[in-house]
Image (tube, rainbow, N blue to C red; front, side, top):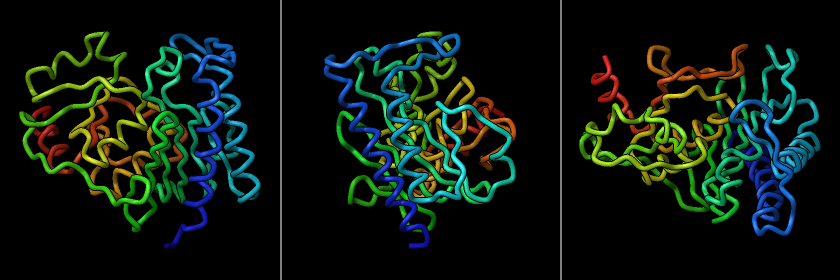
Length: 261
């Protein structure tokens, strides 16, 4: 495997972060919640997990650059060949609400292409991982995307926030079922192991929300696109992916593109 060491480091970094996050889940430790910006909370768990991930990555690969949700972005990442893209706690709202649908997301891109990804669910201890041209796995078992090929039979995974705002309502008659789910990284991981068929995001997402999950989904035979822009190349100057973002099997993504045209 070309990126075997990088994958091992990513998995261990995610495990370390997950252990920290889980220690906050029983109520014994103070989350110390605050708002970074409107509707964007951060907790002590986010920050402590971020420190653990960055420390582990820097010890293993001191020459690599790191982009994390919880670290100030600088222009130093522009043009670098190797960039770790990290969300130490994707699904902070779910953690605060006591909904076990949050995850640690650690990805590596080389020249803008995702090559390693790990999404770790602290509450279930499920580890989704993959590397370029090596496949995607849930723990030790190889995984693949759903074989559902009609939108009317598909389960669409959707953001709880977008669902509560009515942003998912236009799709209510299009799919067999719409299932509100937490973390974007976790939604991509669930698509990769056929726990859902399609994900549509009607709100922008940052590169750190989707990078690791995108790699895992690709290696599981799926794809993630933004309508009108196609597959993402990472480490762009503008970190936001503009909606609609569509992910799933190539067949279903293609069917949705036809419907939305």
